[in-house]
Amino acid sequence: MSGSPAQPPVAFGQVVIGPPGSGKTTYCLGMRDFLSALGRRVAVVNLDPANERLPYPCAADISELVTLEDVMESLRLGPNGGLVYCMEYLEANCDWLREKLAPLKGHYFLFDCPGQVELCTHHSSLKNVFAQLAKWNFRLTAVHLVDSHYCTDPGKFISVLCTSLSTMLHVELPHVNILSKMDLIEQYGKLAFNLDYYTEVLDLSYLVDHLASDPFFKNYCRLNKKLVEVIEDYSLVSFIPLNVQDKESMQRVMQAVDKANGYSFGDRECRSLAALMSAAVGADFHFTSTLAVQEKYVQAEEKTVEEEAMDV
Image (cartoon, rainbow, N blue to C red; front, top):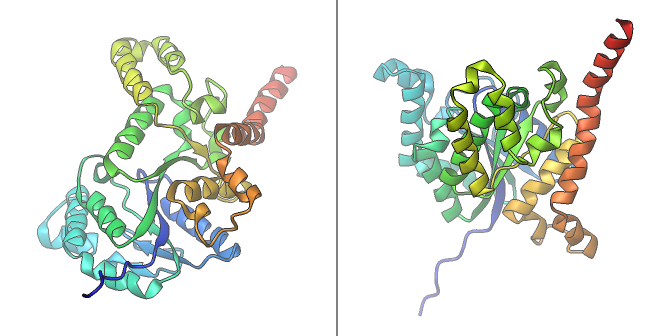
């Protein structure tokens, strides 16, 4: 009696998603360099057909299969329609992707994905590609990047929370939300609350009250209140602050991702008590790290304000 087909070896990795300009490609470059320095063999896969200038060595590039420019020209589609078509084409030609990934056994994968939000909140093709990767024994974490400047605008931050929640429910992968470009947050303006309020998504009623004081948002108070109730009812969304140039910040993100996809509990990691205890640390670890980020990037602004007041 013949045995069952051999199970393909387990492969770990991240699918990097988020709105345009959130820093996905920069993150892939930074995480590739960071993980490579730790001894991991990293393969970056570009799944964005609009990504023409790649700053990292690419193990597989969707442009070899289809490009957004060609689709827009031949089918007379706009950028959004062209991206949808490209993802549907990739879904229909997953064998191409499997052939590209097959020689990369033993690598840790970073999938650089398109920035069109609808692909991760409504459309199914990219989600189906992720599901196909799971069938090939890929254990993936969705890393969702959001620009940290949205924290300075309460209305936009509520929108970001809704988008993040919708993405988490639609993509159906272990999920880590990231506030990117944290080193630039002091340039965006003063935060209404401490940074941990935004990363831990604490009592959002304060955010609604803050919006109610704005004449523009006053008419939308009931809508904002209902949106906030939906976010709090699910109680799924939280963020990790990230500065790609800061090694400690990258390490925190790496540990969160490794916990989410199980890499930290695999044969490749030391199963010492210290390692398990480190992986088991939850909210307290992230709260402490957020306080450190608050002090590093936000206090500088407060100090500037104090100095200006003294000058006056």
